[in-house]
Image (cartoon, rainbow, N blue to C red; front, side, top):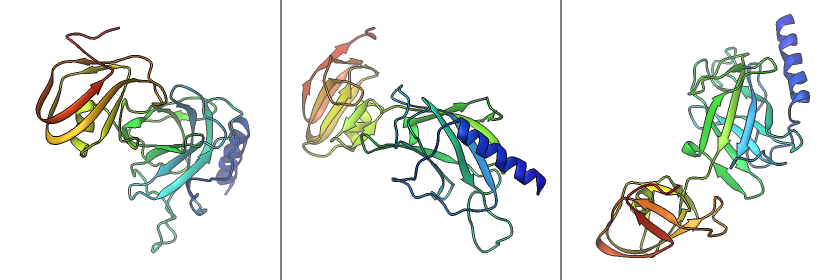
Length: 244
């Protein structure tokens, strides 16, 4: 019991030191249990610190939310203490959280844009400080551990129909439907793209990071082949090499 009290006191002290968590609005927090893993570190969204109301959620292998932290917006890029629930071995018929070694997934909610980030949009790395030990990636559950995790969030550079993000123009085209609009950031895209489906799409390049404005051109470093269907292209430069 004494070790448990000390652990809980450390979590409380670090919560006060770091960002104060607000009530969750996007993800519902999990029920309380007796076993926890604690996370903290730096959170950046598009290279900037989080704002009040931004959320970090941890999911278990089954896709259930097992930890939520809501940023108070007053401590810069720091988030935490984020308590991740573990399974209570004393309740054999109920699974309250993650088991030892279970792989964890992190998602981020940006309140100002009502945007959820997940998958390859979320990059994790180790953080060390204030009693937290640097995480290894992929992140796995360890009861009573204080694990430091830096979270960096970036929008992928291609947007399809104002709803779904992709890493490449080709991936977006393969998911497109007739009349779809593909928006690409003002960045270099390595490799070519082939339009070979019997549909018509529009490809617009030169967008900024949040796709709110166009401030240049997208650079395609490779061939653009139209084998079937049609494509309207605007703001795209085809180049034999990367353009600084």
